[in-house]
Length: 308
Image (cartoon, rainbow, N blue to C red):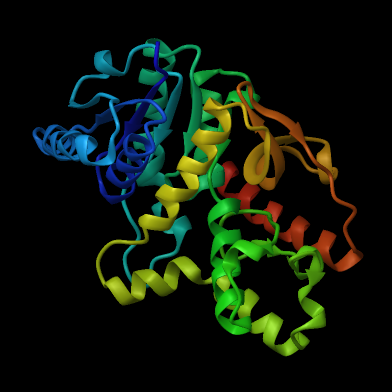
């Protein structure tokens, strides 16, 4: 029997994620949204592309959580997107109501699912989803670090004129302006980028990465990024469904790791069929640890606002 992935929210991120899962034939897909006709129409469009992709998975659009029953993975993309001059944190209360309702429904219909949270502010929404579902924290994961790392890899590939495939990097912390990219662990085919670039250039690329989402929002003028966030979520889905045990930067629940407790924060984890199978602790410099602590404080402030 094929695995089942349900995507909650048929907006740009959700529909793109559904398309990528179907195109790669990773699992049967259910696309859910409260808007009548939208998930059905987008799912039908994706399904009609499957013969061209040589994919035999089923794709269904729905307004009923019943159709998402017994999902192996549920991806939460539902919520309000950022607009120009808005931060991810500005979406806090509006999206909290959405994520709480979705999480409650998931807990009833797919009690054994692994949940991937994309909705912003992502780290806080992941914590809210975990508390609401009452699932093991290993089965509720936030998408953020993969996207942030991909943005830094992109900017570095342009600067160095090399393939982004040869660039590896790690981004820690909250998925926001206070994320912590780690140039010390950023390499091109194993060679540190400090061998190729001056500190000033690296700092500029790190700054652009931190503002990567806002840059896209300002260009689009309505709506926010969706191709790369969807691709990041699907990399997580693939690692879980195929038990690849990839080491990926994701928002995971910390209970003492990095000196942080009772908070979801971006860290390198092993993703396999059980969800987060291990959290890796990297030995940080004093400056890196201070940045991570500051990022953690920003996330905890939002958690406190929601009284999670």
